Image: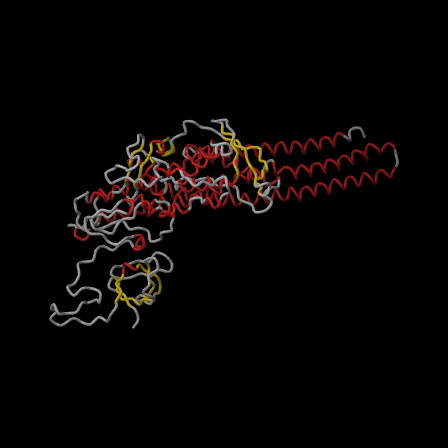
Length: 615
């Protein structure tokens, strides 16, 4: 007999490969084996696809009809349900979240924060370690580095380190350093109000009234940026951690809206002297760059892989900040002079944007990168590296570090309008940047090859004419012959000027466009996080209007959404600021170089013209 299942709840498909279910609908199962909480089957409309395993009840035996009297001797409707009947079904659990849930605990019990919370008898909520363990998977492994990175010890193993396994108890205390000065516990776990230690809270399906029965659903796509960034967990009130005073990131209200608080100690950093170095007795070669920050004036040397490691840490830590992309890697020709020069220019642009960002410039891992001399203090370098990789203020906990103005300053409709406007702006700017980059690249190619060749062809033709005139052997024609030959040489020189000019004007423009194309590629994910938060606010408001959710709980969701909105708007404001600064400077440089170029061309032509004065 074919496997069948009965739908316990309605389910609406939102992704390709899923099918929708209606309550009490009977489905045919392709297999009883679930795949990470999903089953495959065919619904009553003939659609085949995936649906949450927790939303259906597998029918393991035929369904005989009950006796006419319906007495106690009637067999159970389902083979796996006791004859005594069953209690009313609880509200449907979030389908895509099922793989994270643990077996249900007894009503009113609490589990250790490290193992996941249990609120009022419901399914345990995942702990921060479970929710954001995926971030730790991306941490750099020593297997990927050479011996200068290897170290068996970590900062997390040192006494008092936050990453040593200490986690705050529910009362705010911690078993390791919880009372340290300048560090305090922040939490968005509003569900803790359902019960306290030693006091049993009723299970969700026994709470009187309808207001506590509804919850804001989790995204079924657990691989979306909103979920992976920790934005969803933060908005739903599942973030909890210790925040040091130095970790707070402040958003302030400026004349144009929210903006990041300025760095009180601005600095710049130069990148010079790319040199080829070797190790392992010459078996391994690499390029080292000398970095000199203006606020320390102490040079440090970094390889490209160090930049790459830093970028990975920053991109992981700051989900609503656009970390500039590094120049692209290259498998071959890494030691060619042109490639080294181009990469250095790209790193200079990258460093300029890093040092200009009020948040990134003050980040501990960036300062460690700029100031720790790895070649002379290897232990300090390794400790800073391990500390960055054990950072707990990532994922949902990152949003705990944000300090924002009063939420009354934000209007959600206005925020949504600004975000939509910026989304259109980035799309148009990206298209325009691609077009300009293509045009500039094609024009540069013509200058290097076509224009040079054409001007030299003209010059060669003039010299040919001069050689023909020399056959005249008349003394009074010598000056003319020499002037025409000089004109041919002038056109040769102009051809060389055209070939060299793109390095001075077009190449810097294309370097800037490449940097901004990286920024533009970042913003769809940043906008997705903010849009996901707005969606949760709208859902909570709908529940309040339907009387299914308490206003206080919905207000908490909106407050946390406002935090993400403030940060997103501050990042957009910073992007526009540096965009105006960079493109103003670059366009001025481009036009100045164009003027200098045509002045050189004019000078060559004037010199050729003066040769005819003495003919």
